[in-house]
Image (cartoon, rainbow, N blue to C red; front, side, top):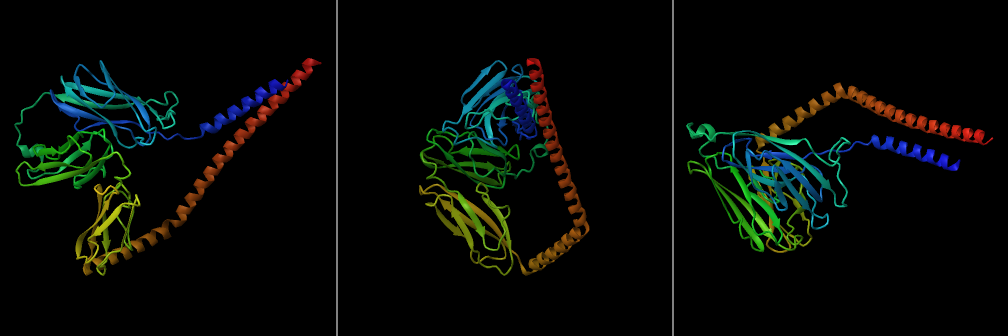
Length: 427
């Protein structure tokens, strides 16, 4: 009799826990496949990029399916095998979970278009965290560790002769900006923007070469890349020089790449950056290196507060004194403990003229009056809606509690019924 009762009680507890777990919402993130151009000419090479999304992974296995009748596989990252129309790529963090991957391109694959037509890439993957546990990346329960709906479609067309004026398809003749810039390894800081010219990267001693993808905004602009091969230990300067089609404009993008065995000694990050009585735009983040700020006409000097992540790092601030009316560049250079790795945080500080001060004050007063008016008109309605939401949430919680209570009572009735039945049977 005790065994029967124990089994029933265990059954009730398991069901109750299942109900509780079912109310937990699982965060989901998907892999994405992207390319620089979804229309490719026949016999042209192109690349696809796999992005991991907002999940931290310590190891994974990717499966990419493609049309090998129309596409020829050219290259991919290490630990990649190709069998017919299937690419298998495996990666794991050799540090045991210290260098997990998140929000980045984790793999780049190059193909050649052999035949015209529409081709599809389909992607699945299995992911594990630093504890070796599988990561649920799907909000369905059928295949929780695989992503089966990530896909990319590319159109392959016949190679066309350029019978159109160059400006009609390539943009301005004097455009020397990049549209895309990326490395074959993660870690480039800051995130690429055509207007940002200085970048930073830390490589381990096993990295001898860096593959740089640099695509200009104007198709006919000339791009030259140097310094990315044969990296030496220490500081390396990689230059991406973009010259416009008419040779009147030139942009130089610089990647300061440090090759080292001690990444902490190469740490040139800021932990804190603030200016007294000044709001930075955007809000400070260690991976954002360019900011804007506006100050009154009465401000001639700035009190800048900058603290490096590594206490042995050195901070040098220039441009904070004797501000002129208009734009001023304040540079905060952080030199790492190794003495040669560095990073520049730039703040474009606009000192307003007296006329701009008046306009600024008028806008502030107008915005304040508008905000007060909205609060007066909508305030009561807002708080009423908030109360309704709270009441709805409370009703839902009460329903869940009542449901579980009824279920437990039903289980206890079942236990008592079984006990009475056994006693009668013994008599």
